Structures are given as structure tokens and as C-alpha cells.
Length: 109
Image 1 (spheres, rainbow, N blue to C red):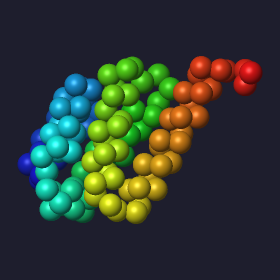
Image 2 (image 1 turned 135 degrees about the horizontal axis):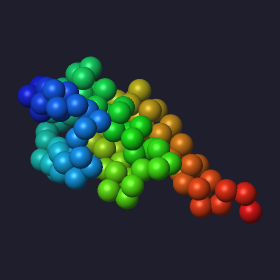
Image 3 (image 1 turned 90 degrees about the vertical axis):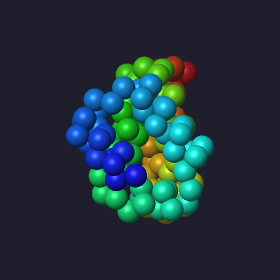
């Protein structure tokens, strides 16, 4: 886990492509054990990655490929069962939903 986080931080958290993010998150979600998820949550850099990738996915101008990374990221965070992260996830998910609704219906009609 630390090696993966180190490589992502070294490369640049925001520089990782949407497809690579999706691949990483899907493999973590599908193959990692509880210890991995716990270690992810206890690592400050991993939480920075989570926060930045969620923010990127929650932007109004996010392309479809970036939006596809949000749900696997949410799955990874939910599997961790860590309440502060869950609160952050719900905040960003709600924010994303509101922003998408406003984009689809800017006049509130």
C-alpha cells in the first residue's frame, strides 16, 4: 500500500489519468483485504489522494472518464468503514448530485 501511495504522490496526485485511477481503484476494491483498507485510511498521503480524486470527480466540468472513477473510490472508502471518510464521501456525493442537477436545469424549472 505504501509503495502504491508513494508512486502516486511521486508522479503527482492530480496527474494520474482517469483510466489509471479507475484501474487502481477497481483492483483495490476487488482484491484488497481489510488490512489494506485500514492501512489506506491510516496513511495521510492516501487520504490526500482520496480527497483530491473525489474533488476532481465532483467538479462540474469533469469528463465522463473522471466521473467513472467516483463510484469505485466511494466503494473503496465505504469498505473502510471509517466515519470521517464516510462523512466526506456523502458531502462530495451530495455536492456532485446538486451540481449535476444545476447543470442539467440551470433555471430551476
